[in-house]
Image 1 (cartoon, helix red, strand yellow):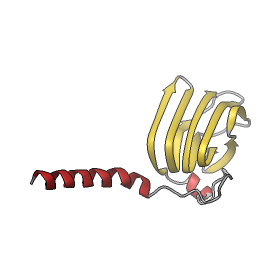
Image 2 (cartoon, helix red, strand yellow):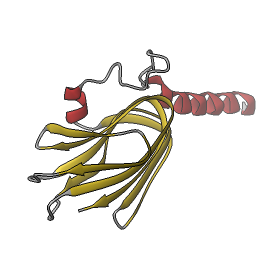
Image 3 (cartoon, one colour):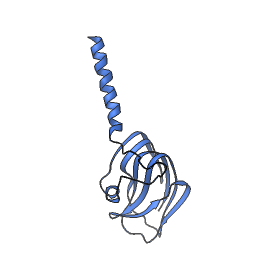
Length: 150
């Protein structure tokens, strides 16, 4: 009886842990890091994603988001309403595997992409509306560090 109970418990745990990876989007374009499955409509739609071993931290206007494996679209920062002349994003984005796109959207449109790489600066002029920062990944392992100046 104890042996059967142990087997059932182990099987349940294995199923629970493996179900997290069942809906990841496969990276089918090799060394190319651009998205191959997710569309702009999906990026701008509702946030739907699955991830494994992730963390997000915020300190003032600095945000760090890490994931061992992430697929889908996650809104990293929502409803940013800049008050100055420009919205400046200092970023360092490291992609270890998979496909990744980080975008700034406003009123249902993609305003710009935040480039992958270290010590990047993105400036958005002609401000108006509320901005979201969205992360779209396909089996992506990454670390995103953003410092927002608005």
